[in-house]
Length: 144
Picture 1 (cartoon, rainbow, N blue to C red):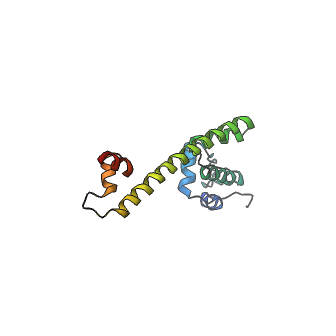
Picture 2 (picture 1 turned 90 degrees about the vertical axis):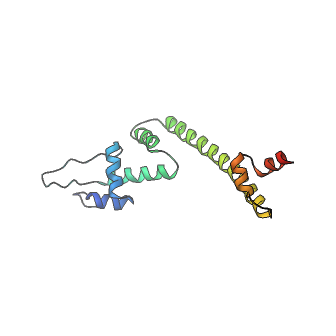
């Protein structure tokens, strides 16, 4: 961009975020707010755009804004080992969430299957299972 820098709108567009997102990150201290010159219009440099892109990429990988703050501190002179530990912790969290999602998927497949085969009067097997906290198989075994 020009040596004079970019407006907030141009910087936000270049990074692929909304202006309000950039302002929010400034309030959180994730992105520095340039000084207001006599002209009254702050100008943003490529460093701001790079930092915004870094934040977006971190979020795409599942890092929270607080975790991203730690990554930014590490990027500003921290150790690679500390960064690796932070990434390993995030990976463990994601793997646990995936296990939870697979468990939820199996339960829902079972519930949908029980409902698809049911030709009985209400209650619907899904509603019944949700009401008593049991999966359909557990519900069938309890009633048998």
